[in-house]
Length: 443
Image 1 (cartoon, one colour):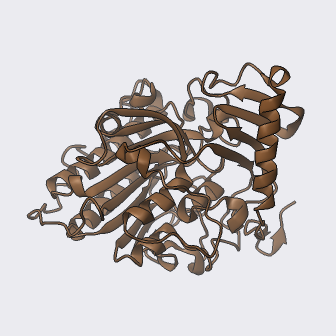
Image 2 (cartoon, one colour):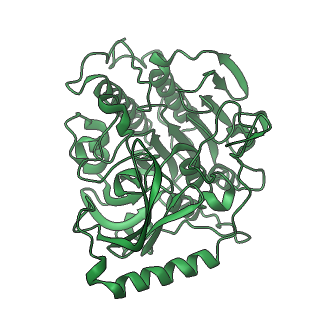
């Protein structure tokens, strides 16, 4: 396959004037799987990612951007609903995820980002990994997306069906061609809806293990197979961005790139890197939940901006809906905040605190630069370690979380504990949708 000419089979067609405008933009949300904080050139990686880097170079790069969970299902549920997983039931007491024999999924009463934008007249598509339920009632097309192409859960689970809308079209999915096919679908959707407005959720299956890539990228990267996979994702991002430019949509589209959780460190060279951040996937250390966060919107988002303002994936729910002229649901608790001030360069982030959940357990909390750990996990090690008094780190000065400041800062710990008590008082846990697997409770 020729990486440059892969999409030439699609006629470009004349660029049309889009209905979307800076006050009512299109949205392209790009989400990778298990890609560590470090695993892009703009975050210090040795893996060349020129297209992802171009988003940062010409937009806003967040240095402190967080997922809502350290594993797939709950983090994606939070992204789609703007709500902590404990509120929407997409977590359990053992930091689990949905499996092919799970009977649960995202509930009909939840309002997804796609549903909210669809109400504002947006065309919507989900391309890639879903992982919010594989049964018919849980698929993307039942939750606000007009179109869907992808795997319903992680690619290490069997069976691995490729689904188009609501129909299984391939099983097992040919994973070597997934990224090119996702690219083709994404480009086609943009071209068909170039008069806008549209919301495209492009959620790559990789670099989740097992790693697969097409012939055009295999054995090309100095970083091995993991690098091959990330470089193909970067190529795909470039094709989609080029389509926006060629269609005259760049100035009318807000593009945001992030990842669902930290790198799968126990996979060694097949896993990614969190760089200086401590630990990775499955933990509430910084490496498990601090993610790449990059926004691009030519003419609206100031190019070359690097910000240390605090933000997270749940904030995209509130921000996108507000930019689309919609109203955030008022009949439920929404944890996402409006980060337009950071994106537009008009002020600081409204987010001053962050709560780190490990399944249903509130494991850590952040207030300003300080983060307190009440319990911790370690990659590849079963069980957790309780901390009384909590560990305390200044994660702006010490992102590797190596120097415990608890002894000398009792006043900081007291403030964090107060914030936690206030937060807990407002949280009503929903029944777990991960508990049932073919009718049997997890043990």
